Length: 259
Image (cartoon, rainbow, N blue to C red):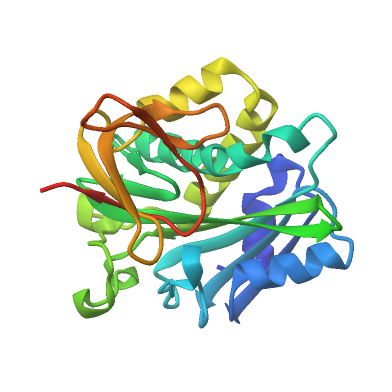
């Protein structure tokens, strides 16, 4: 992968600009900095290696050279999109899940931001923003996808079991093809973020639907219940043992399946 190959592979998408790095700390950090300097809508950062990649809650994200996809897409939300920004993680999750489905796989979305194959994490999403006062000026969609076996770290540093596309498929798919498909899906799904069909598609791919889970919410606080869907803002909907509906908001949360 290099800048020229990337620009050629993504030429049909009409992206505003592409910044490619052989190695970078974090694609999201680069994208946030670029956004603050005026990067336009659909500007893309891609790296072959991340040395300080991070997932949600500042967890490290392992991205060795030539093994994974690590990219961050900058969106400039329109006036109509600004009330829908909490759905952006669903936009990215659906886009990636739909790519994996075309490979004959059965991906599920572990709320709020992981993609699972066979119960193991194959991709993660990190949504961040730049702000002016209390208004988001840009949204950065960070995506990491484990492509080759070497992208999966040793089990002693994992908080959740992981896998790669090579583990599941038995071969290493072309990273540029996966990247093009994921970006094309984001672009195609974006105008539908405000629709019921978008929320329905997201909900249908929820991991643990109908099963008992525990959501740890920082400190000693946690809630438990059966996964029954999503609120309109993308919050997770649970029904507890007393039949009460609980909405779990985005934030410092960890979702765990009850054994």
